[in-house]
Structures are given as structure tokens and as C-alpha cells.
Length: 339
Image (cartoon, rainbow, N blue to C red; front, side, top):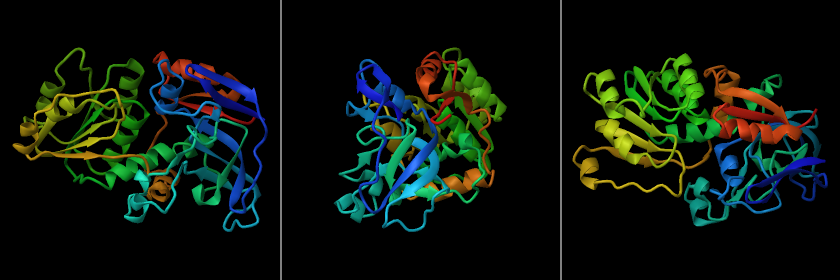
């Protein structure tokens, strides 16, 4: 079969590899319909590499497909059913898993980075990682967004948003735009988005956000103006490393959510500015029991992501997808993995 394989730093290739086979009773063979490119995938194939990955691994972790074979120990899934993949495989045995923090599992296998992922014609996954779609006719372009949306839903379980809140979203990439939709659905009064790239600014405006380009005006000043001097009740950093911008926008008694990951970013922060204004700072990492709710949001049409997915390519043209993201031409790119 064809697969997109991370060979070495900056080296991603479409290779002919062995079609995976079921080797354990609880495994399922999936014919992959589509797999979305995540920012972490871009980090893997960048030079220098900005995300850990094992050379020789099939990339991709935001994917869905159709069941074509099941192991003899699989229950609840049948050939022909369409499923979404939950990519992070946890051990269920470590102290983090046993104390309710499975998303911080000490032995987690990251699909698409250390365990073969979904940028391929076929994929084998344990049945514990699959979620059957109740709406079997849902567009694959929407279904592949379940994984990033599940990460966001996990974060929403950590903080409180109330109807009438002023909100700020730092970054209008796919995650930032998804946040805008969910904040709207939660009753936010105003949503200010900080973004520099034109295509992303336009998408955020279409979703009803107030867009501020921090290169051209003061973000904190704009937020204070739009909130009548109050500041933001909720600030979400979707980029990573924008702690100072987040604190500068946040109201006294407000909340800052750190979602984006940037291991290289360092911020000089005065703890006084947090404690004196009683700002609540929260980190959120990947998925924790949030996939079913994310799928429900997609299937029931609670959120609209028409302006998030901008490009679709076939697997052979995957490099065009990465180039479109790097060049600022695309927001979310999806790869069709079978003709």
C-alpha cells in the first residue's frame, strides 16, 4: 500500500510499504478515507524538527475510515462501518491512568509519531481506539476533525465559560477557529481573535469574531476597548508561548487557558501579575474521555467548520498540502488516502 513515511528530519516520502495485518484479537483493519494534517505533523517534517517522532513511522493522527476486517476478539464493530480513530494509546496501568489522568499516561503511544498512523491507504488499530459514527453518512471532511475537536472539548471541561463572557483567542489556525465556534455556542458576548495571516483573519471574521492584527495595533488596547475597559474573562492561547499577551488581555478574576504547544518558547512572567489579579491559569493536553462529545457536536451540527477546511489533496500530493500550510495559503488540509 501507499503511505506517507517520516524518513528523517525534513524528509517525508510516499512509499510502497507492507499493508498492515491484524496480529492481535482486539485489532481492526481500517481502509482510511481521510487524514488531516495537524500542526504537529508540520513540526515533525520541519528542519530542525520541532516534535519528537521515530524515523520510519507512518505519520497522521487525525483520521477516519471504514472497517474492512476485525480480529476474533473484537465486539461492537462490523465490516463496512465507518469509524473515527482516537490516536493516543494509553497503558491503563500507570499512576496517571489509574488516578484519572489518562491523557498524561507515562507510557502513551502517539499514533503518527511513534506508532504507524493514518496517512496511508490502510491502518490497524486496537478496537479501544475506535469510535463508531452514528451518522454513517457524515462527510469525511468533517469526521476527521473529531480528534482536534476532542482536544478542545477536553480543555472546555477544565474552565468555566458563562453566557455574556468576553473572550480572546490567540491564533486563528484550525484550533483557534474551532474555539471561536464553541465559544459562540457557549454564549460568549464578544470574541476577539489575534491573528496576522490574511486567510485566517478572513475566516475568523466570517465566524463573527472581532479580528485584531497585533502587528498593526495593540492587542491589549483593542481588547480593553471592545470590552468597555473590563478585559477578557477567558483568554485561550492556541499558538503556545503567548503567556504575556494572554495576561495583558485578561481581566482581574479571569482565566487563561494554555492550549498551544511550543517547547522552545520562553516567557518572562511576574507571578505578582497573576496572584494580585487572581487570574486562573490552566494547561490542557490532548484528549481525555472527550471523543464521544466531540463526535456528537459534529454529527448534530452544533458547530460549523466550513471555513476551516480549505484544501483537500490526494495522498500522492501530500507535499502540496504541507507547502500550502507553510506558505500561509491553507488553514486545514485534508489528505484523501484512497482514490
